[in-house]
Length: 329
Image (cartoon, rainbow, N blue to C red; front, top):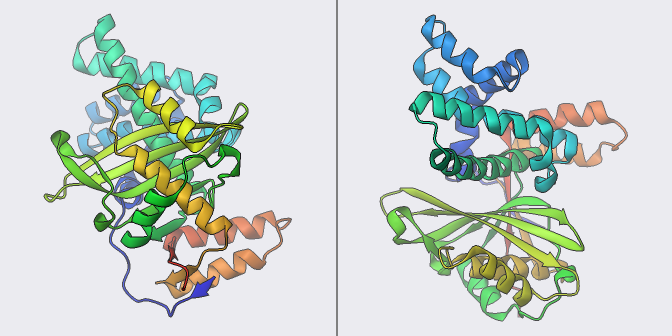
């Protein structure tokens, strides 16, 4: 891995930065009320705090927004951070979803079967999105970047016949930054085409294979955001094309077709790294680099020391980006 000199400009904020790092106050408030009141009472407790004048409407709304994320953190720690299906089966998670749905019905003043069905789907989408945030944070905010020309080549040249079991992502949770010039396009705000510039990927255990949970982030010319959440099942003995066809069939015609090229790009990235393709390490924070090196040198048996280093690293993380480059010819 090649290192470049330390860069001094921090990169532009990612969707993770906007929805997690910049929302720390609301997330910490949600954690506090979850710990104090439990899953079933936290929403009522927040509402009563507003009525008593102890909490602003804005602060309470922020904590309610991140109530499920606080539960996800706790459950994921117990069942395994990348084990999404196991997390959904957990009793605490199921109770949280029920409590959230009851709270929505109470605040909206509507409690019909159709309304509950609609919001149950919305809640599950929120859980999947927040789970991505939790896993990305827990795994150290791993950042990779691929240049437009390399991205276009990987999408075009990665064979659909490659076997699923040979595809291994560089980390079980990371974000891949992609230039708009790469030509990856998804459905932006109001359904208009918009470039995919961030791909959040989590590799999760699945029966007889693995699953790639993808969050595709799009922003249009007006800086309005949109996302697509796609789950790709890669069964051992099947090919990449098989996995894409199966996911396409399960998702139906309403699914954002832009995910297919994103999936091929991730497969290409996996092969590029497995084959020893060049990667350049770009640092923009000297403290982050120092802490990263200390963490790598600290024995895994020294759990307390490693956790202290991780906590300090989170404050400046990620501090670096791993840039995939074309092999020299």
